[in-house]
Length: 242
Length: 295
Ligand SMILES: Nc1ncnc2c1ncn2[C@@H]1O[C@H](COP(=O)(O)OP(=O)(O)OP(=O)(O)O)[C@@H](O)[C@H]1O
Ligand SMILES: [Mg+2]
Image 1 (tube, rainbow over the protein chains, first blue to last red):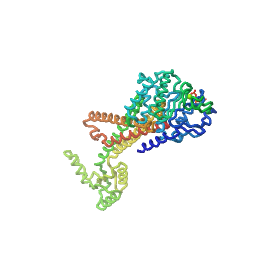
Image 2: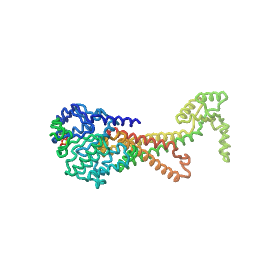
Image 3: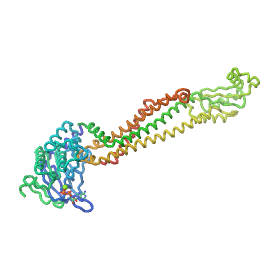
Image 4: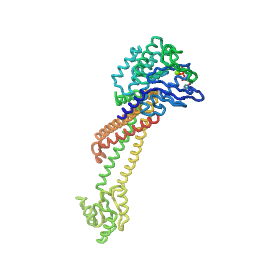
């Protein structure tokens, strides 16, 4: 009962107006690396949002702050209306179940099969075993990995691992999907497949933030694009207007 | 998929991944349960034997002279002053002689040349059941010795003293082996769980990131500890029962075991040992979880 009530409020907030709200956020690393400086912006619920910038600009750092993998040095970050840095325990876990992240360094368990790696994201929210199997098959099919179902992820090529990571991030149908460099190791056809999958999730209502170097995936879109330079917002524009 | 299904599958994975150290832990736990239970078993049986032994214990106070009626009354009062007794009987020299003669039976003619008062008069005292501890009996006997006109108090001191000395030694052994059980069970379980946790840092980290709750992450390790405690103690006790059976079939016939009527633990005590082992192991895993699973 209590858990359901908790879940309901998470649900309500997740469908509020702004999915992500950052106010004057900075992040520095010792000794004196300023990875992010004074970042303020917001991402609307249901939006697909591109985050670009040169290597080292701070894209990954920004995504880590949004999913509470790291804490900001300064500033306020709200995700789905929650101050994500003050969430703890079960609340944080429940929110994280609704946020899918495809990490730049994948974070796959290399001694587990592809299917098991994807299933993890659904298991933690106690989805039915049958539903999990079905969903895993669907995703692998869409990403052209059907034949890799039972391989260990350690045996895959980087491009394949990248897609498994993506599949895991969308598997649990999260409301917010953070994708870090999803097409770095992919050819153009596979890139298209990946973008199709993300677009479909977006159409189904998920808010999506994509950090990328790959101009081909955003240059012809009409989505908002934010460019970071040296840890600061250089520009925030809508596509097709550059 | 529900919580317990997930938790049990995770426990299975953990056990498989570190099975060799799991087996080591399991063996150590069952061995320490075996050692502890073995000595406790001997201990409880010794205590039982001690109770039976002192059941028909009586003290005999030898007197210097045949007491007169007034003296008898005074002695009786003084003895009862110390404590109530079950039975108190004066044996005159005459009676002692007759008893002895009866005991000799056919050979009683050796007494013919002896005067009928060569045996001392005595008081036979059967103490109360409540006064059956060795130290109390000893105190009582010291008190009796201090009474006027008594020569000597006898109650099989040496025998009882040796017996209780042995029991005291056994108490120490039981305490030591109990400590051994506590230390090995908690430390070994904490150690293997630490091993599992360190071996799966990546996975535990990822589980947190995808939103696994604390109980989802922690419960498998707790179950692992509980399983170790359960399996270890049950196997340890089964081994002890085997040993017990072997000893009792091998040593039937006249001997110390027959005298003492060797019993196995009652079901209640068996359950208590298993529960204690489970709680210790659960405690061990809990400390490891606390220490290495910072969430
Ligand atoms: N844990 C850390 N400790 C110290 N410095 C860090 C750490 N993480 C990031 N940085 C620094 O912060 C800056 C931004 O890094 P970040 O990973 O966010 O860049 P990025 O935009 O994702 O780059 P890329 O496109 O190469 O992935 C870099 O200069 C980096 O060296
Ligand atoms: Mg990066």
